[in-house]
Image (cartoon, rainbow over all chains, first blue to last red; front, top):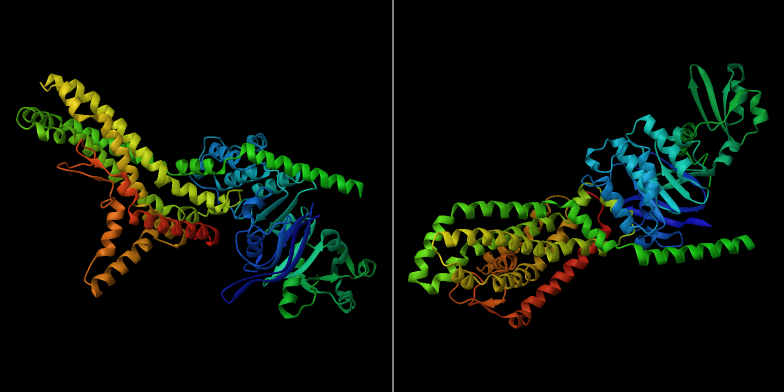
Length: 291
Length: 311
């Protein structure tokens, strides 16, 4: 079952095109990482999906048109848009009461369970909590909602590495159950690599690359090439080449690993390395782009 | 195939259950109003503070009031009510002035505050419609604040009554005739009538205008809201030499020309000689024009809530 279906999704602010005709299908049970440079159109695309902004083109989320049916959609969709959007005057206990009062799928017991693992007190106001605790609180509120789609837009921005690790761990262990769908955008790409099932690069409002993590691992290979093999390796048309400690690391797309292993040590690249490769190629030509 | 249809049936059951749960459990409007009360604690703290300051003033001016009352009861019984009720009416007046100021400040921040602190992104992540939210916000100047003002006024009056009934007999003023002349229960009735008709329904288009601008402005919503009044008023002054528009907005705001009653020979619209005119009020075209204008501003405010991004 598809959770999100977009055809020709487009959004312009005046003359600036933020999202330029995206075709997209996200199925149930996937964790999609949406990766792109600043101003690539990630947040705008997510805002359209969440019914926060009008758009052109066709878009269905859980079978609903988000802009027309935000209220109904939010029974099955939840999101953390940006860090620190919880109202600063709110007490933790008020947040829990309010959620019980307005959300039919909110489980207070679950939220209390998540909060019990933190040092957040019920009578605290949001303004008294540290940045990390506010994110923990927001995550506890959101994970206690039995939603079909969870959207996280830079949920860990500005948090230290311990909180970030904890965040993704609890997301995977306590929330994701295979029937839910999660979309996450982040600049800390390496930290989500093991979390994702699907990957999407977006730049200038267009999808530059979309693949599952299995495809990613099968398709891309990185080789630290021995100096004497460099010419032979370059003949295999790497999509990107970089230097580390005087050694050349070449990134290949759809080249047989058997052939590569003769050139040096072969491994699966990091998402960040592929991102850099795809973005720098994309700047010049459309090489490396895939649908 | 079989499992798929099972899944389908299950999800249909699931959504039925959710639909039932929605009908039974959630009350978005009620909780949206609760949220406003949590967020804007200053509205009752402010009312109580004004009442407290007034009560202190009342105690300090007690002897002067008693002297006046003593001399009046013998010489000028016709003016007796004015003097007997003066502190009560001044207290009610102070709280009504607070009500107007609070409504203005509340409305001009209503849709602006949540955009300024970006918490609108949290509120919009929940299944509460923009209409419900704006309705909950409009109900603060329409229902919550006036009832609160009335309750605080009655509580203040009760404390004053208690003090008066101890002090009056001790200073030689007849408690019975004072109580009879004061007629506190009809006074409260007329006070509630006056608050709701002159200070809530009458200025309601102004409050809706403020809510609308608070949903639109990127900064200083109160100044933006005042701008058209200043511009239109200024143009009218320049071209026609009159000041009807500014006067209309001003009197709307303070309830000045609301045709709620006819007072004869009294300072306050809560006296025994006040003749209430609810039918004249309800039959007044400007009341209904005001409602239409308020409705238009309200609908536009809902649209603003839907379209505008955080600032």
